[in-house]
Each structure stands twice: as C-alpha cells, then as structure tokens.
Image 1 (cartoon, rainbow, N blue to C red):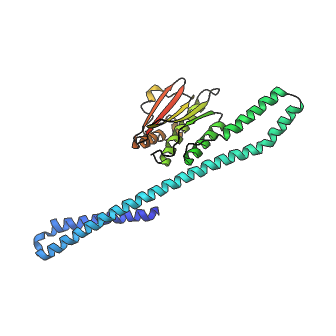
Image 2: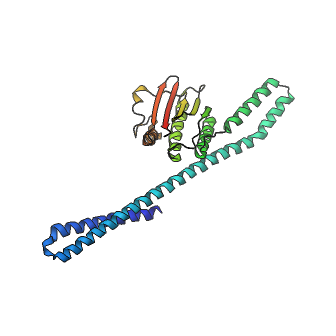
Length: 283
C-alpha cells in the first residue's frame, strides 16, 4: 500500500511539473499572438480544466495519505501491544516455571520449623508475584499494556515500582499512539537513570491524575539526577548523555507530541531524584 501511494505521489508531482512546463512554454516561448482567439480560448480552457483536475486529485491524495498514515500508526500500536503482552506472558511463564522450586524451599523451611525465614520468604515471593501482575486500568488498553510491560521490565532490573492512578484516560484528546510514545520514552529514561544511581534506592513512581480541566502525569525516579547544564538541552533532538547507546530523540519526540496537543512538559531534578510533569487540557 505504501508503494502504491508513493507511485501516486510521484505521478502527481510529475503531472504538476508537466502542467507548469506547458504553461511556461505556452506563455513565454511560443507567445499567445501566434494563436487565433478560438485556439487561445481552447488552450486556456484546457489548462484551466487540468488545474482543476490536479487540485481535486491533490485533495484526494492528501486524504488517502492521511488514511494510510493513520492505519500504519494503528498497526504500530497493535505491534507494541503484542510485544508488551508477549513480554508479560514470558514473565508469567518464568514465574510458573520457578513455582515448583519455591514450593521445595517453603516445604524445607516448614519442616525445619524456621518460621521467621519461612515468613520472610513467602512475603518476598508474594510481593514479586504481586508486582509482576500489577493491575493497571487507565481506561486505555494500549496504555495499560505499555505500563504493565515497563513495570515488569523495571522489576526484573531490581527497580521498585509504585503506581498511583486517579485518572480515566478514555476521553483524552491526544492520539493513543502518541501518548504511548510519550509515557514509554519518559519511563525508559527513568529506568536508565535508576540503573545509573544508588543500587539500594531504585524506585519509579508513575502517578496519573485528573482535575476538572486537565490530565496530569507525574513520572518520578530516584536515579542519577540530570546535570544542571543539561536541563535546557534534554528536549533538543540529537542530545544524549548515553553515548553511542542513545540517539537523543526520545524526549524531543515527547515534547513535540505534547506541544502539538497544547500540552506542557516540565522536568525538575536534584539529588533526591527527577520528576517529569506532563499536562493536557481536557477541552
């Protein structure tokens, strides 16, 4: 489908160039005085009809390109959802695989009457399973799948997760694929920051709120702070502190999508951690 639309765009551009060439040739090379009034009238009519037809074709092609773009973005969202679901499924399968091993340990601790050790072990296993299967209900299935996948990824890396959801995003105006890109990029940055920070204090808090007029998102992390000299640069395309591993596009894309939807993004960072604040108007 993309190839067909590309061919159509090329054909349309070539047609415009040909029409422009005919117009220039007719008006400046041949000269109108060489034609009788009747012929000149007919040529003007023909050029006018061509211009109208090309204008109609241009409108039609723009609509088609927009529709194709929308379909492709929806497909990308579905691919992201499948990837997130696949990651969650793998995590749950690994938990089931380890379940028998956990039972052996619990059985051994029960037999040896190590009640304190047994209690601590069971609590740790329960917390691990609870965190991995944390229920997220934002009102958008795509966002739910993304958050659950990112939370599972963070837990595997030893990062504690706290989710505070006091919003229903069902009616949010921004397109879901753009919202996924925004949240995904900011959470990925939070995970990277935590991995560079204190190993004993790795935590991410995702807080979704709404007021009468706004949706508010807070993504906090206790990782390495952003240097003051970089605070004005982090939203610039191409800027990265990750060396060859980074492309410097994530946060610039976030800012672009947010501002396109009349939203705002702010960041504050110090030795206690970093918080990104994103807000969108409801109306």
